[in-house]
Length: 112
Image 1: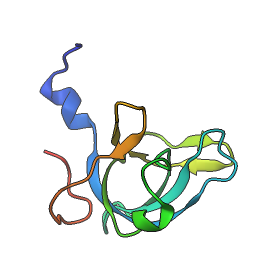
Image 2 (image 1 turned 120 degrees about the horizontal axis):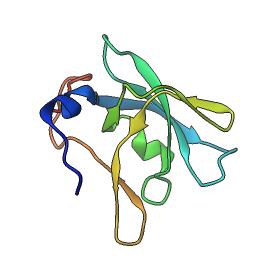
Image 3 (image 1 turned 45 degrees about the vertical axis):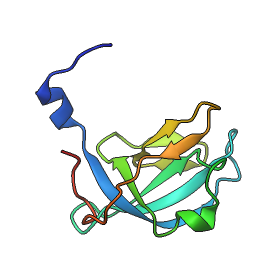
Image 4 (image 1 turned 120 degrees about the vertical axis):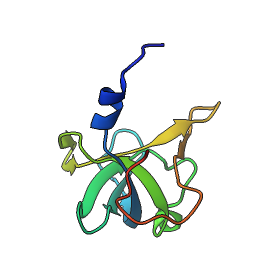
């Protein structure tokens, strides 16, 4: 495992957001949703493509708290521009389970 120092970790802006909208990403090669995620007043709403269709229906994602990296540069994914990376973990069978806070915390809170 490659190690990093504290300054490297501090550069990553892992923030809590709330999914405001989730719709099927029809043009995606791999099944995915386009998410609109609210990261609070300071950061605002960011768009992301998330390959979580195996474990989540679009309607159950709305209102869910998630953890996202908000300081990656925007990335073009097909016809959509992704502005953040929503984090998750692969299950044994390769499906993606979201990384979510287990308590209600303010939107935009940074992982510490």
